[in-house]
Amino acid sequence: MWFYFIDLLKRAALRAVPMGGSTVVGILVIGICGLVAGYGFTVLFEWWKGGRTVASFVAALKSWTPWAGAICGVIFCWAVLILWQIPGLIYKDHESLVALANAPKPVCPTCPACSSCPPPQPQKTALEKPHQCWAHEIIGGPVTEDSFNSTIVATHCNYRLDAPFCATAKFNSDDFKEGNISIPGGWAMGAGGPGKIGNTFTKCISAPNLGAEQLVTLTVYGTKKNPVRLLSSGMGTPP
Image (cartoon, rainbow, N blue to C red; front, side, top):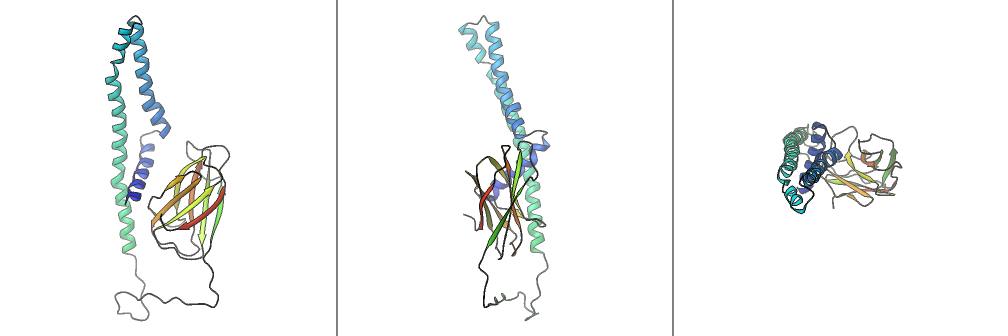
């Protein structure tokens, strides 16, 4: 539940920032830090006008109230914009679950009148393939405004993975920021995950199940000119 809530807030923030005509750097540096710098200059000017005395400096420091209100106003407006995105995201996730629940059910060939089919019996072969996964590294994908490059890790396994499941990639450095997880050619409902821990990035999917040989992609965005390179990867259940 907490993984989904945190992932919901992240997705709402990613949708709200472009709507506000800004970036994360713009909010922090131009918005918040700019107001703090404005307060500092106000104190300096008032102290200078007051004769550069201790009393004038103390009086200038008391002018913090309007600036604190302005900072709270900026934070409040961004919070409202982010929260405004959440109902739409919840409704979109709800539609995906409804579509999955209403999907045509397979007809059971052994008992057509049954309300549900019995689980199929696995066919044993003389030589069963061991469970394996393979990862492919793709450099030069799409980038964001505050990144230099991106690295995409495409993973597929020779067996079925039941949701929820997670994909993990370990890189040669931690010079990257979190991206997303997706199923190319299909839809995926995120379930959060540990995210970035050092040079490792893990993201989870709560639905749907993943078929054998179906691709899952993890994307990270490099914060330096040299892109991060994949060392190892894996698929498994959420921690």
